[in-house]
Length: 513
Image (tube, rainbow, N blue to C red; front, side, top):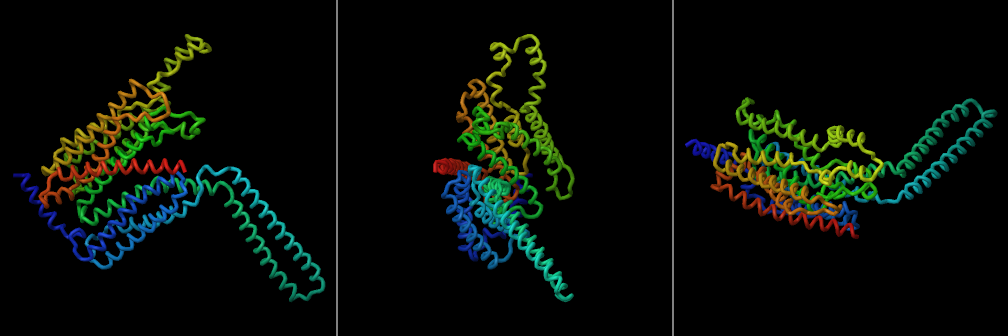
């Protein structure tokens, strides 16, 4: 009886929010063209352009230009549609995010002319020397012209009248300002030719290469929200929570699959042995393990999410359901902190200080046998930290049994909760395989269990995003069940993983160029 009442209430709420761009018939062809162009720009052209830009391929410029033009034309159609139709979503943020995307794409296109780190250092010194000589020549010419003018002024001063003397005194500051302007301009050109602004532009380009995909994801998500009319009123906090948390897991799954394909192997993040400093450089050799960053992210989530769980309540009061979410936040804070400490090299040295002191006291470390005895075992050369996997398993277990106001909501939470549990079991199986057979090469071993983990994390993240109140109300209103969402999500997950593999192959092709 209670579930029937809740279902009826959801249908009434969905009916009141049924006025959306999805149901708008006028100018539908313009909206369809806008959706096709923006999806093509952000989901097809942008990933290819990013891979080519990271690999510094010569074909990156035309692909980035195609992306920028497609994005701009799609935004123009969106502006035309908004001008010709009434505003059905007050306070929507899709348009501002879209304009940020346009500006970012133009800036990114301008940064594509910045050379990568493989520019020869000799060019720096040649440019610096060239502009330094130019600056010194300008300085000498300005100084000589100023001295000649002062000498002429001194000779004419003996025979000139006071009015002319006054005029020459007025002209002297103009000569000084012109000389100062030339000197400042020459110094600025010499600084621009140095390596420091080029390094700053290279860093800015690297930031754009690795963050503009997230901006595209935000553009697509906000577009879906506005088009469907979701997250209205008090549902905005529930929708934001599910979208942000699910989006994080979605990108975490993409990162996991990328690691399986060999990305970040130079940091030792592809379950491989970390290459030496002579191969990857000192910066990559000092990089913490991936498990450390996973634990740090979970710890940060736990700290920031403690006081945000009751914002969707109309009266601001704390309820038992809010306290359950707060307990999960404390779990992530404490578990993430434990994971960071486990991966801390300093903590490992301190906890082994007693053993090392015994070795140094009772053995002669000059012999080869004693040196081998003091080395760490092979398993410690690879970061094996099950804490993030345990936290993921506990999150899935609790959410799969979490009480929800409707049957569909309970089913959706159970689906993504169990999906996360499968991902956690797969990660633990990966650690078991690597513990029994540690990697002996810097080549990524590609454990098959990580394929299962990445698929489940991506699908679970999408299911988490779609388990918000607005989506549940829409499913109830249209008499759809949770399996409708699940089947579409797993199909989309397979397509996304296939497209990611193709994009990384394009990156490898660009590196060969």
